[in-house]
Image (cartoon, rainbow, N blue to C red):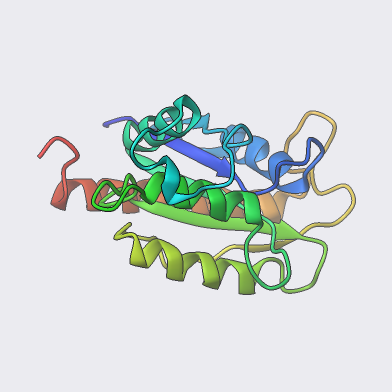
Length: 190
């Protein structure tokens, strides 16, 4: 089977982010056909079209990292019923300058965790709207709004609860199948 390079973005820039922990656990649960690497964006300045004529190195690197990925997985918290400002800023960098949208035709998935009972459902819906505008084919199902509870991720960075691990393995298997389907129809080298 073909291997796909998946760039993942962690919406929170906090070092001890529960979404960063979830991302690490997902990498460990993923099928062998998905090779993950984090795409960092914490060095991006606040986007302004003033940069469009001469993108800074951080912006060029970020766009290149998105474009060199076969797929993108965004693991994000919900801030004020939306996505974190740093993540939105990174997406703005990748989508500019006009006509050079790095997300176009790259399959994407969205997942997140929060201590709240509905996880990151509302923030994910907002993010899906943004990705839709950017012409990024999205895996719409299964959705994954994970309620973070103490002990969910053990000291080894693995999902401790077997039913949660099973759900997340299924999510990643579905993501793999989705990426394969999209890239069959929209090959990256076309």
